[in-house]
Image (cartoon, rainbow, N blue to C red; front, top):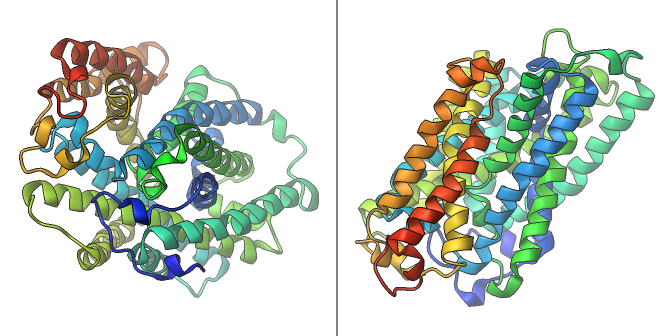
Length: 464
């Protein structure tokens, strides 16, 4: 472990000084590759063959397409961190205004809580599957303790954790594929199982894309310490391939397992398929859950601080505040995990549907503003001014486009909770996120140009 990783991080949401910038593009590859190889990713991939009943060929294609497409948006956000040196949600003040960004940031906090709770549930189930003496609740608590410790130390320890997990979890994943294809071969008819439906195929593409887009609200949090001259392209490609490969490979494993389990219990299916080394495999993937959960807790706390600092602009939280909030945040997620463990898969699928609806229009506004309107030039000190600085308290243009982006998706939604008329007319095909991206991006660009926002780059002119 490096000296930096062994120290508790002192910074929170404020700009990282140039003298403390460090890291290289490879660090972005490992933080996203290592943190994605875990049980939750495997379970998400299994939706292709359990929830959507796809054949292995169709599942493979849908998983790859979804991750390759969604990864573009994720990686474009990653490239913003080195340029601005602040967390992603703080930067959103430059698009939505200081108070206008609160709604989006609050939704992101809920998103982090949901992902942490989901990971804790699966971590508890995994430990119980290999050690019956460890009940699910005890396993959930053990994983939470591992995760909160890494979150407390912060940025450098999380990066170091993910580097180790890149090698350890990567090797375990390779062993899994070898074990279920050579040592304990899959059923001979595995390629004939399942079917191909348009709704199922597009549904799994959406799940893969969402997996990537869900990282957008905090991907810059893990690149903001990098030197400002790191370059957009290296940050983009390192994050892109790290997250796409780290997500798609375990999802493919999940799709395979989904065709072999009768009761939909992917964790038990993994343990059964990797006998007699299942104890080692499950332990490794459970430890991997700790890395991802720590990332979600860490970023959830940064977003919570962002909300608090909006209302208390003279408050300058440091390491102590971050540590206390880490404990509080984990306690809330732990309560959610213990309460919702019995209906995990239903809750998780509904959670994914909600995320898809609220994240797509946000990412469209953010990327258009950063790359096409302001070309990466923001007045960072204005992010922390009580009145929002040159960006004001609200940007009506961004808020209108964001709200419109959510509303326009409603007829295209296809979920267990609600299916819109257009989605129903097309056999339950959900393309809501595509509609949001296709409409909100051009709309925001056109309205921002008309409002003069493009001229208000670094303090020259009024925000739109």
